[in-house]
Length: 246
Image 1 (tube, helix red, strand yellow):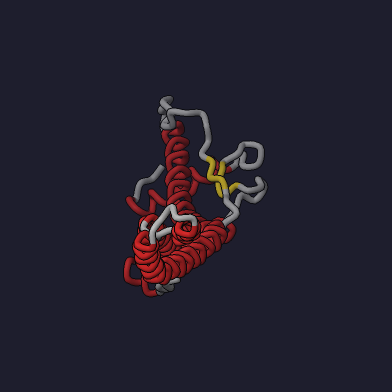
Image 2 (cartoon, helix red, strand yellow):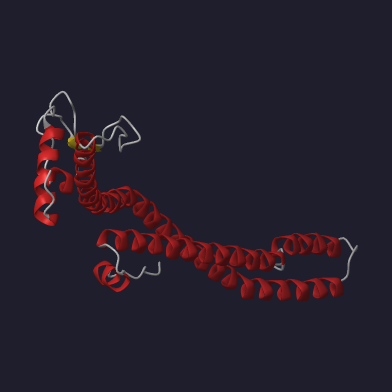
């Protein structure tokens, strides 16, 4: 079988600005596609060769039938029902048929050998495709995990920034209340929750001191004094930034 060109996964990843695991999946897809194309080409060639062989077999004279006719004709000559001229004519026909058969048989053998080689190559390619399909789940797991790890880094960074803004808004809400506002800032009574993931960036990030699997949440069961603390920190920050006295 024609060898499938190996793809330099690292070079492909660098060239296309994608992860090595994504490049490996793409290289795998390209190998499968190339092998399937090769199988299709080989299958078409097998069909073509078999068609030519079938047409040639149709042209193959049946020498055994002519031999039986010669036997019958010789018997007829012996009893006077046929002439030697008929024997001569049939002998010429038999000779021509044998010559044709001798010319065709090597061609048929050539077609048979060609088809056998094509079928072997096609089966080799099919075996390789099956092997590649067995490899795909592991490649996909690695690719998807790399995607998850990268997305988790963005999730943690963006989530913690959002949590920081959430805490400041809650602190400002407390300060507004102290300043006489009775209009809450938050349109919902729900608190912000930032779940953790079993991924590196999440496992390395700060976690809630009590709630398992949570990166951030203000929970009144465990964080009763948090809004007051946040408001005090915000007073200090505003005083330092603007000189505002409360």
